[in-house]
Structures are given as C-alpha cells and as structure tokens.
Amino acid sequence: MTHELLQSDIDLARASLEAGRTDKEIVASLGLRGVAELRTMMLLQELKAGKTVEPDPPTPLRGPIIRQPEPTTTTGSTRPSRSAHPAHDAPTGSKAKWVTAVLVVALGLGVAAIIVSNHRAHARLSESDNRDLAGAKAASGETSAKLVVELVPNGLQISGTPVTSKNALEMLSRLLGAPTRTNSVEGLNKLLYAFDQHGVMLHSKDATAHDSIVLYFEAVGGDNGTKRPFLGELKMGDAAILVSTDTKSLASFKKLGLADAGTNTVFESRCDGVKLSFAYLESAQRLSLAQIDLQ
Image 1 (spheres, rainbow, N blue to C red):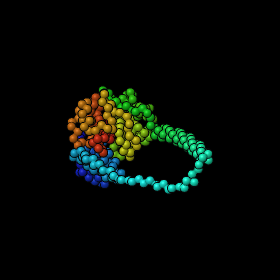
Image 2: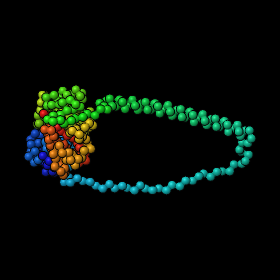
Image 3: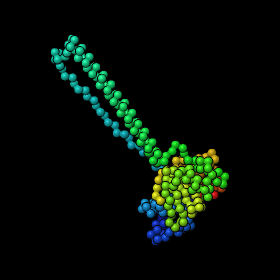
Image 4: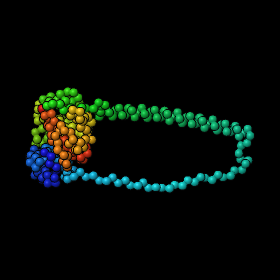
C-alpha cells in the first residue's frame, strides 16, 4: 500500500475514535482505503494526543529560501581629545625613570596573575564539562558503537547476531539491555517492547511470537514510539539506509523494487524475502521509521 493520507482518511479515523471503535477496526477500515497499518497507527496516536494532523501534500512542497539582507550600520569612532598638561606636571629626570620602572613591574605582575588565574579556571571548567558529558552519556546509554541492522537472505542480523521471531526479545535484550517499557496496543493484540535509548521497538503478538522490529530514525515518543532516535544503520548488502535517505534515494535501491517515489509517505517492499515498511511522516527528505517483519 502506498496510498497517501487524505483529509477524508483523517476525518474517518477521528469519527471512528469518537464513535468508540477499536484501533483494530479503524486499521481495517483505513486498510480498505489503501492506508498502511503502520501509517494508521501513527495517525491514531497523533489524534489521541490531540495533535493537528495534516493530509499528505499532493507534491513535495519546497519553498525558496529567502535571505534577508543584513542591515548595514555605520558607526563612527571618536577619539577623546588630549587635554594639555602643564610641563611641570610630568615627572622629570631620575624620578621619572623610577616611577616608570615601578609601573612596568606592577603591570607585568598583574598580567601574569591574570594569565595564571584564567588558565586554572579554564582547566577546572574543562574538567567539569568532561565529567558532565561523560555522566550524560552514561545516563542516556549512549555508546560510541553504532548498531548495525542488516538484511540477509531470508533473515535479519543485528550487529552480526541472527534475529528471528522466536529469539528477538532475548537477542535485543542481550545486545541493548532490558527494555525500558512494555506497552500494549488497544484492539491490536500486540505487545510493544521499547528500547528507548537505542530508538528500537519490538512488536509482539504474544510473549513468544515477535512479528516485527521498528527502527525510529526520528524519535516520536508516545506509547508507540521511542524517546530517542535510532542512530545506527539499516544495511542491504553494500547499501545503507539512514535518517537522511530521502524518498527518491529509497526508490533508487533496486533490491527494494520500488516505483517512483511520487508523493507517497509510506512504502512497503520486500528485500531478500523480508517484508519492509518505510514511513516519511514529516518530510520526504528525512526517514521517520522503518518496520522489518521477522521470519
């Protein structure tokens, strides 16, 4: 399904929610209209949160970049006039040399004290900043190594470890740590295991069967999204899909077999026997999320 989201789809979903219909019924209704399940779930989440949802534009909207000229200001500089001093006010002879020497020594000591003080203060601030940065990274679970999710013939590997519908929760927990949240989706009979710090979410039919992994390249938050974005790579052979992969670049990957990008916001495809879905919720230039069905 590559049907773009119309205003009538939004109105139907909103009316169905007000009528008390379940998420499962609404997904089925919009599915008959060509709207992908993943797109409908995101729509329902936004409507429940009270957000204003706009239909997909018929064509990518790009406006010219208008640069405002910077105002030019003319500033004049004035030099204070030197007042004349009587000649007898200036020190003369040996007295003048002694006063000058004292002033030079005092000025040198003052400058040296300022340099030493600034150097020590800078060192303390740098040490404090480094401690704060290290603490923030540790608290957020940030690591230097990026997660690599790779599609292989009839399967999936994460950082070189095979992941299937049977071992997905165990493997993800081993690689990423325990899930930060476990949510249930009303009416869809699914459990969502969120690995918020890594931008990864696991969808499960029950405690033993896991049906898909969702990579949130853009953190959308809420019950159905992660709090932090996925910073790794989704690889298909030598090709890598990133948050910066726009719709035209996505359609150019031959292994996906996608047609011209057009104005679609959700794409469904297969690669090496694995079903994939890609969603561009905010812009055709930035990938929002990718869903990978597990074997």
